[in-house]
Image 1 (cartoon, rainbow, N blue to C red):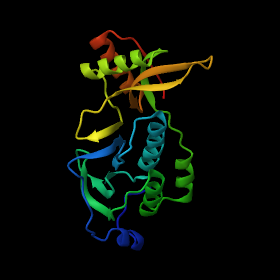
Image 2: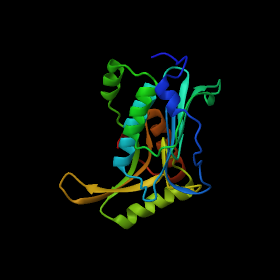
Image 3: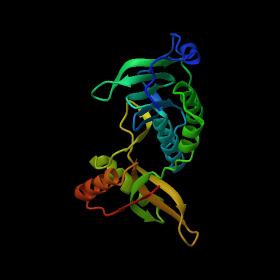
Image 4: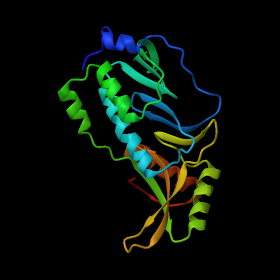
Length: 224
């Protein structure tokens, strides 16, 4: 795909300058950075879960794959900017200013496929992408209280990192360590403590080392 030289009639209609609400001083939801895609998505009931992380990783990666070389996409609480990148990677000249619309990620993907002139072959290839986000597991046990204490100790020490997705209130110090309830191989309840969500093993390994240095807690990198 090539960098757009002009915006087609459809994108011009989308790019009409509209009065759109910008970021509030305080909001709940999640903030994401995947490649050249930056998203701030509002949601009063937003909660860090493996399902949310996997969904955002998949669609964030697919949207990033749509973008022509030298462009990026910033979506701030429904206010969307598609722009050429400046030398430092930030938004420079606007390619298209899309109207305010708090779309879900599949809908945003569809809009960007139109604006970027994604071909049928491109769309098929991108839709076939599979993404496996990683996390750092540092605890697994039967005690929910113990799991919560381990997670709290990591956040208190500032040893963890959010990775590509931060969920909670903004501005706020949201937890990077999370208790995920599940079942063990025998079907018994188990409470796992995981730290962050990452798209590269190197980033996850760095956080694992940080937790070990700060608290002496051992763990391992695993698929989320």
